[in-house]
Image 1 (cartoon, rainbow over the protein chains, first blue to last red):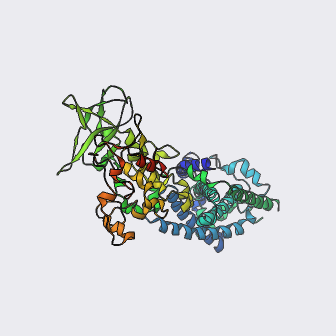
Image 2: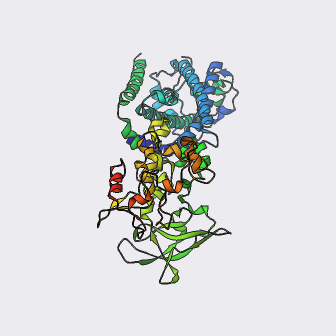
Image 3: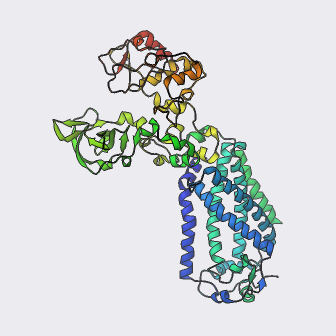
Length: 235
Length: 336
């Protein structure tokens, strides 16, 4: 156990660099090599409501809290309190952790049904949604495509791990050293994984797919956007 | 339905494993933790760091950049491994490891094992002056180094500490030198996962133990021996007091001493009221130690200098009185 924990202590900094810089490099490389998908969709007028108020607000809270938690969490992991006192930084982390937990539970519940895998999702996965080619490929997808569904379930598990391990780390005196150390490793590794996939998610929802970003601000997208990206939406 | 079942089963298995593994021994985990470096400790314990720089602990070994000295100097150094002849080598002082107690410049010398004191710093009215410790055959350009290896364990423990993450330690005294590797404490925040009692002090402060002489029935007390006699004192044997009853590990008083009160008298008065003690009597210094290497005796009157039967001809204390030898050997952590 302690050997594993020492490995974690030794390499968590490197893992953070890989998760952040590595994912950003992959995103930039993809943008240069493959480019955005259906660029013309970015210029169309958004007229269909894709996300309702609850979806927009829970996504916004989850996104904002993730960013703050990632920054403060990385600060804890590399023992740099950003010029603030440890206690202050901890309270910021805990406040946004509560928001993250709340918004995560709401997000998971409202999107769980739309993220159940369907047979046609295999078609999307076989061609990786067309993200690996410059050709414009249109594959069947419901409200969420297979990639988004994978992202949903991965972040669901990671969020549960983070919330539960975070709870143990908030009250370390209540648990044994062994349990708290396991919680620390699970918290760190889950957070690093979440940071990496969230950076990828942010890229795919913005630069890689023009016309998508409105989904999380006003909730609207263009008709053509729905037709191309999510033809089976509403089925 | 199947998906939901698999989901909840996974969560139960993962956290079930967590709870079961909680039964393992904590001691092994704490002792084999990783070093994380003083900056990591300070990120939480900022209040301690604020006063620490004033202490002797902070000065036992400092980095070269603390001194306004041109370190980029090539010098010829004569040094030897134990029992061997002196050999010369060229050395650039900027590659030195640091400065011990604002005085000795410590370096490694290629081809000779261990660490060496290669030069000395002298404080002047205008700053610091760098000079040799000794010279060879009257030639001022041929500097003679002295061994540092015996001092290194306590004066620059970071140079020889082994263990996971030991590279994060400063050459001198780091938080984890006394408190042990801190990764588990940093992760769990549990007070019991870090050394925070007098064990932190005695690791270094009892190294100067008296050794049985090879050619006689007496003990030789080594450098800094005085603190070891703490274990003979009534203070220690009472079981009520420890080092931290009088001392402060992270701050200094007005005189620069690591004591809770500003004077010896006030420190004693904390418990003994108005009763006055003669410090030179109950905390005597070795009168034959011209270099000031002998820490004041900490037996608090239990072992007086006169009781030891010391031979003043030697620079280290020779303890020849059989009664004193018996007392030291019988004390819980004294003797050889």
